[in-house]
Every structure is written in structure tokens, then in C-alpha cells.
Image 1 (spheres, rainbow, N blue to C red):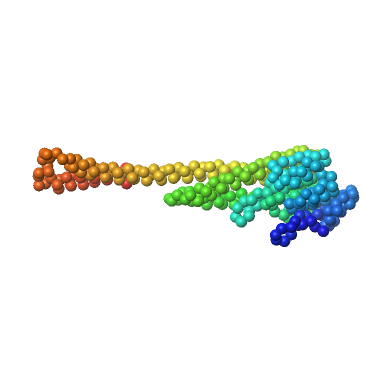
Image 2: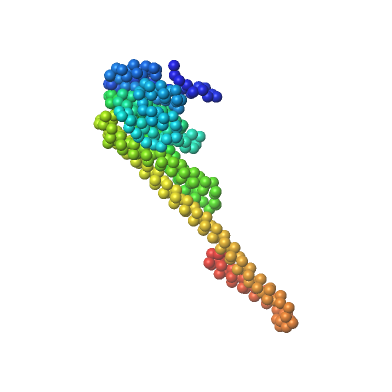
Amino acid sequence: MLATRSTTADPVPMVANCVAYHVDGTRIGDISLDEISDVLAKPDTFVWVGLVEPDEDLLEKLQEEFCLHDLAIEDAHNAHQRPKIEAYGDSLFIVAQTAQVVSGSIEFGETHIFVGKRYLVTVRHGASLSYAPARRSCEQSPDMLSFGSSYALYSVLDFIVDNFMPIVRSFKEDLQELEEDIFEDTFKRETIRRLYNLKKELVTLRLAIGPLQDILNQLTRMFPGLIRDEVRPYFRDVYDHAARINESTDTMREMLTAALSVNLSLVTVAQGEVVKRLAGWAALLAAPTLLTSWYGMNFAHMPELDKAWGYPAIIGFTALVCGGLFWLLRRAKWL
């Protein structure tokens, strides 16, 4: 019977799969957790187990069946581990971060992997897709699956890295859309918010894929007792995919930084245009203000005020000065 986790909705199975294979790569069939030790007692078999957020009892059961190290089990209890690879005798413990698009936003999770000569155990936490497609792909190539847990590990890590690809493409599309908004005439606060959120998600993605490169690099060179030499070229291929994703995220981060700078510059220029126009109108209004202030002085003798042409002359002179200023400011593009 499969272990399940009780929720307010339907029970969620904590054991996604538990399958035994022959060393020639052919599938024997599903087995229960209690049968693992019996299957491993046969020298020509290996086991692939997939768990989803298991409880402590289930992890302790797996520790008993596979003789897993106490420190590795302790780390697997906690879902917030840094990406890493650790060797415990004749087994490996790997932590890889995963990413998934949920309701239009990127959510990150973890996968803990236990690898031995004749077993592979994956423990999914948080946002992570099922590894059933990777397992089916392996079963369709029994000649490759005959390499045992090494090839199964490659399939899981390749599946994790490949799932970053559509997220990176989505980031590129969002960035292109935001670039169009940046160069619009009107300032949009929402554009700045989206740029900031996109940059934050890119940083998180970089922190997920960067350490995974180190893990893959070690798998291509180290652990001769666990990683078959025939499988190492496949790990190098996954490493290349991870490196391309890493380079893409770095490039987009630089583009986002440039986009934020351009947007800030455009906003500053727009504000400068407004200030320049206000200064132009202020200068235009200063001329009649000066003349009216001049003739508002209460001197006893202002000869031109006694003339019949005095008032029209002042009006004409004021209009001439304002017209000249308007022409000059218009020519300087201040109005």
C-alpha cells in the first residue's frame, strides 16, 4: 500500500513510484517499500524510487532499506537546503533546485537525490514536476538503462535542466515586451515594477542553475565507483545545457540593468522637458510683468503717460517684446 499524506483535499501519495529493474535495463515491475531489500538481495537488479514530500517515518523506512547515511536523511527532512553534492561512502546525496511556472509566476522547489550502485531515490519538495517522463524515456532505452543508477541519475538531472529552458524563453519574451513599454512616451510605474520582479526572478534562477553546474562538473570527473564511464559524456551534455542557461540569465540580467537605466534616463529627460517649458513660459511672462511694475511706480513726472500715444505705445512695445521672446524660446525648443 502506498504511503499518503492527508490534506483538506484528496490524499497526496508520498511514494510516486517504486520500480525494480534488471541489470540489462528491462523493467521487472512495481514493488512495495518492504520488498526493496528482497529485490536488492538479487545481484542482477536495481531500484528506482520517487518520493513527494515524505514524512519522517517514510524517510526512516528508506534509510533502513538502503542503509542511507544519517546526515543525508537529516538534510532530506528539511526542504530548504543549498544545492550541493556530498559523498557518503559508496553513495551520493545531491540537492538540486527546480523551477516551475505556477499561475503565471515562477516558483522554485528542491529535489534531493540519493544515489547508490544499485538504487536511485528522488525526493521532491515544493514546485517540481513529476519525473515520470524521465523514467519512461529510460525504459524506452533499456540498453542505456543497463548502466544502472548512473543513467537514471543523468535522466533526472537532464529533466531538471530542460525544465529551465521554457522559463528562460518566457523571461526573454517578457523582457522584449517590457522594452517596448520603456520607450513609450508615457511613464508607467507598472513597467518598473515588472522589470524589478523579472530581475529578482533571474537572480533566483541564477542561484539555482549556477551550483547545478558545479554538481554536473563533479559528476563528469569524480566518483568512479558510482558513475559509469559510459555515462560521463551524457553528464557533460547536461553541463553544457546548464552553462547555456547560465549565460542566458547573465545576459538578460545585464539587459535588465540597462533597461532600468534607460527608463530612469528617459524619465529624467521627460521631467527636464517639463521644467524647461515651465521656465520658458515664466520668462515670457516676465517681460509684461516688468513693464507693468515699472509704470506702476508712483512718480510725479512720467512724461509718456501724458501723451495720447503713450498707452498704445506701451501695449505695442510689450507685444513686441513678448513676441520676440516667444520666437527665441520657440527656436530654442523651450516652448
